[in-house]
Each structure stands twice: as C-alpha cells, then as structure tokens.
Image (cartoon, helix red, strand yellow):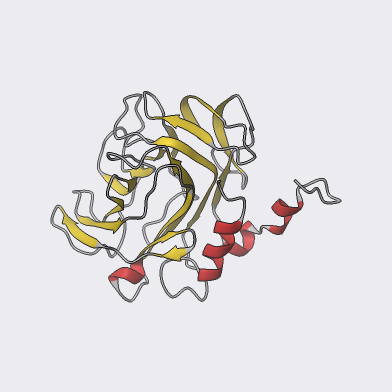
Length: 258
C-alpha cells in the first residue's frame, strides 16, 4: 500500500472519519494468524472475540468465521456505539454459502439472548434486517430478496433515524452504497414501524445471534476488515437514513473486501 510522508498509508490518510461523523471505527490490522480483538481507531472499546479468529492472508485482513462455537465478537454498548434516534453501521461480509439463517450483527438489550434491538442477517432467500422499537420485541422485519450470493463480498449498511419523514426514510438498508427497497416487511410482536430504537444497555455482537459461547445462527465466511458506526446525529444533507449518498459511496469504496 502506498505510504505518505507521514508514514501513514496514503489511502488511510485520505479517508476522513471526522467528515463522516463516525463515532466508532473497528479495524483489523493482522494479515495472518489469530486475532483476539479489533481495535477502535477512534479510541473506544475494542471488539473482543470469544476465541481467537484466524485472519486471512489477503490484503483485506478479514476474519474467518466457520459457523461453529464460539465464533462471536462483542463489545459493550456505550455512548459511542448506540443511540435511540440516530444509528448507522456499515460492515463487509463474504458468506461461504447463502444458506440457512446467519447473523452478521445484533444489538442486545442485556446479555445473552435477551430482547434485541437490531439484527442483520443474510439468509438463503434474502438479506434480512429486524428493527425493534420496544423492549417487548415489537417492531418490523425488512427483507430484501436476491441480494446475498455465496462467495461474493458486499458492504452492507443499516441506518435508522427518527427524523425520517416516512418509514423507508427512517430505516435504510444499502448494499455497496446503493439503497435497497424492501421486497417485504412484516410486523414483529405487536408490530408498527419503529419511530425510535430501544435504549439498549447490553452488547453489540458480531457473527452470532448472542454473545455467549453457544453457536446460534452463526455466520460462516469472511467478516471485516472495517466496521464503521455513526451514532447520535444525522449528517447534514441526509434525506434518507443517517448518511448522505456520498458518505455511503465513500465508505463502500474505502478498502473493500474482495
């Protein structure tokens, strides 16, 4: 990778987390061997893994998840991780197979398999996002058909803002920077389009449905090498979701997983 006069890779210097308003930027730095954590470049709490995950030898530095116990990474939620009114996450994934139900990311209100707030799942038929508006499990499930393919790397974005004018302005899902239109949406619990997220106090979980050492709808494939989060505010100029379209494009084109 090209190095600048400061010693920092030129591509990294050209990427501005400040202009994107990121509140957390988790990043893998290993190119091979075992990895026990992803540091937050912005100085927050690192994502810790229940067991060391093998990093790929490719330049992407992604982690290999084999779908077995205990393939899970988690981080305690804090002010820099989550907000009930404005939250966006972008992560890169390359599933080994587009089969069954796998979990890329979940926000848990509490520990273990407690009531959740957001779930992101690639499934055999569709990419699926569950958004909850109450601790009782009420919310909406959004499905996006024919978006997941085995062995194909994508950058997935999920954004929620309470400031959106319509339901689809509030919950926005993107693939490689392009906003997707749900193929279907169904109520969860008592249902209702979320107007605000649950005030979670638990953990953000990667690669598994909950943060225990028990495999529960685990992800199989490559995950990483960057995870971007913006919480607490909406970008100026955003018309749908938390981010502007230019911001989605910038995130997608920076160090893509291949």
